[in-house]
Picture 1 (cartoon, rainbow, N blue to C red):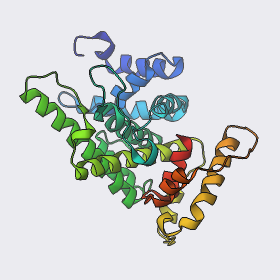
Picture 2: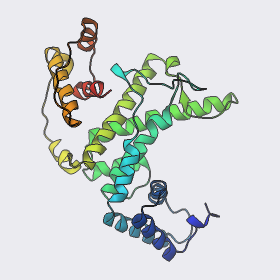
Picture 3: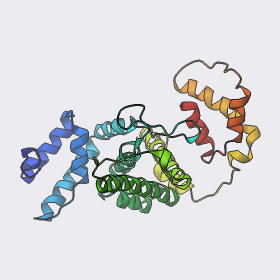
Picture 4: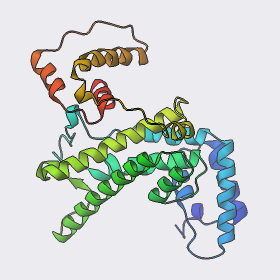
Length: 288
């Protein structure tokens, strides 16, 4: 980077560059913005960096379309969990039967937390520090902050473990793992981490659509409303399934329609599943 003229400029030139990126919507703006707002000073005149950082945040406040670009890039990702929490792995190639922990989960946490931070003028750069600051400012409830932080640490653990293991064997280093060889406990930890990522993605999506106010959520979460989990209300499950299916049609501006009855085996699977994510988990089944 130090030799690349794109990243080597005077303060005045940097301000011109940032303004050009935001106003022109350059093709690689998502990557440029990521580098810009994840940067941190390590040497030299730190005041110059602070002035550029302040300028970049001021310009970002004037160009909300920049966040839209980041939303679109992040929104195209999906966690590798299928029906009833089954892992979705590569269908072919050298990594058949494996999943990439970094590209299938870890990077989603980093991107989603970055978007929430930029949207709320949080100027920390590390993901864990950003989560802590979002909690401190009331944009994320403390329980959710712990949930997302734990997911990040679990995914990072498996990504690093994969790299170290392959390096020790002299193999090509990557972050692919084979979930089939994991212990039941490891599988459950990984599955829970991916579920947390999916929850975080839903939160970011609703905040972008204006259907979710993070500050209001943090205030409302001070009151506790106890609702029995779905596994204790199995008689309600099929009714909720029908409601969620009809909502799926409405969200796509399609007319409501009758859905055929479930066969006995499918109904039994749904009724016996523990549904740890309650209605959110059932909704994911409908969407998949």
